[in-house]
Image 1 (spheres, rainbow, N blue to C red):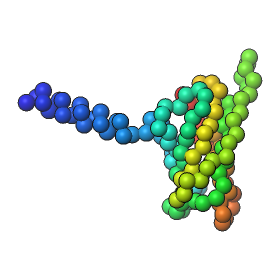
Image 2: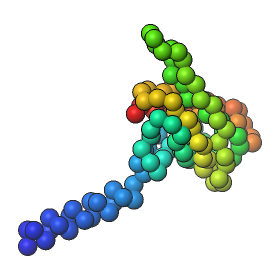
Image 3: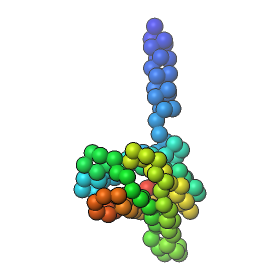
Length: 127
């Protein structure tokens, strides 16, 4: 019976992990909240990220652009990637972001809603 219980728990855990996103992060600026996900782990090269953006609990419609950058360090120049996100509807956006190397990248998300003030949400991605 103990073996059956262990096997059942192992199967339950593995099935729940398969349904989870490989990358997830939350960012916030005042009342603007962003939930960032990716189906695959973040790696050097092209990455597809999805953003669920809300303000005061309501989805935001408008223009979203991203700027990922890594400041210059001794022996290494600064790196930057800019991209516009595609609106999928209901406050969900998708962007293909090219990160040229592993490390900590600063990520600025610029939001221009159809109504209201522009805003910028800052976070980091580390891989």
